[in-house]
Amino acid sequence: MNSPLRIALAGLGTVGAGVVKLLDENRDLIARRSGRPIEIVAVSARDRSRDRGVDLGRFEWVDDTSSLAERDDVDVVVELIGGSDGPAVALVREAISRGKGVVTANKAMIAHHGLELAAAAEKAGTPLKYEAAVAGGIPIIKAIREGAAANRIDRVYGILNGTCNYILTEMEEKGAAFADVLGEAQRLGYAEADPTFDIDGIDAAHKLAILASLAFGSEIDFASVRTTGIRAVAATDIAHAAELGFRVRLVGVAEVVGDRIHQRVHPCLVPLANPLAKVTGSLNAVVAEGNFVGRLFFEGRGAGEGPTASAVVADLIDIARGEAGPAFAMPSHHLEPIGAGEAGDWRGRYYLRLSVADETGVLAELAAMLRDAGVSIDSLIQRGQADAGGVFIAIVSHETDESAVRNAIKAMRASSSVLGEPMLMHILDF
Image (cartoon, rainbow, N blue to C red; front, side):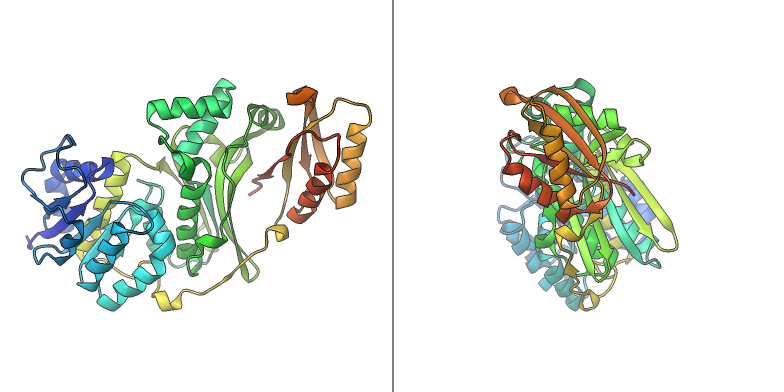
């Protein structure tokens, strides 16, 4: 058997400890599949004294994380620190500059600096792998980069954040308010103490930007991802969706329309017949549509010690085998700077929830506003007492431009009959 692949591990949180456990438990199997052993030679983290449930005494502990890239006894640096900038990016840049391979689970870093890092890795002739950065244990990066490499992919979408999916599923099953379910999720460890990146859609947007670049051969454009989280989703929206034959999910969608890319993350009404409606709890799911292979659907655990460690070690196995290739399926200089689509250009059906005064003539007023904006009503529900003495109305439109719906909302905001801010959600019709 060939000489070991020697790795340095930066970051010993949940995922880092999982990598150590996985390499221990499946050591012989991994060596046979890799054609060589994979061995940790050095580790680094902020807290040396913390008990991580694994024996770290056999590895050299390095206090200065950046020095891991300078070691002659390291072939690959595994970056599990996190963060779009700071020590993580500095370590990866240094590792690549010294010709060392890099494996990372850092979706923020790849979304913000992926093109730069990919170009540097190609110039240095060293691999940059990031399977664990998107959808945890689901091998979606490999599937698009390798399995569907012969296809033109026009659309990629899915449920990319397990915390949001868990919250929405609990709201659905218990009829509970968002704030109550979020608090419970934090107590159970499904949500961070500061859940902003998850519930505001930023985490999902990072992942979507990476998938879009990989799928479309475009430069990463995280800044163009239109992002709306789930804070404004109310229990009444969940109930209305169920009555109309939908479930509410936070969905990331990237699609090529003409010569533009539309990228958006937002809560959607998903038809019950759509496989994404059946993805519950903290699971993730990704769909890619190729022009020859058709629709590919992947579902699995998107985070956590086991799934994410599995993706990290799978990348290490590829490197041990000598399987590298460009990070984004083609050389970075072939990635195209495709422009972003305008929000108003998107066509589809929409769900609109309003709190309105319980007065005669309000429905006629709303219908006139929608008519004047060019929005046709497909269905309407009036049920349930809203705050401030109003009632809830839920409207589903026929297919129209998003700009038309937003023009109608602008008119509604100016009406004394509309109480509070209208809630708009897309309907996933593909």
